[in-house]
Amino acid sequence: MSGIRADLARVPWWATGLLVLLAVLVLVLRVAGLAVCLVVDTAERVELAASNRAGIAPLGGSSWPLTDVPTPSGGAW
Image (tube, rainbow, N blue to C red; front, side, top):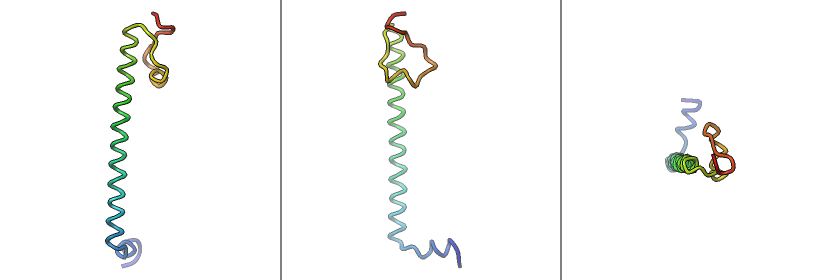
């Protein structure tokens, strides 16, 4: 056996276990980051919809990425 398979066969089991553990940790952190992103995006959309319904200007950070939603300028329609 030669090539990549031979190189991988020579890797100690403890190193393989550490690499698998690191890969699982990275995947868990990515999933957690996506969940946080989903929660924040939903909260911003709800805040933007509520401020539009109330006729007031939304917070500045909530309105810049959502260009497809009309926002009142100056706080009144």
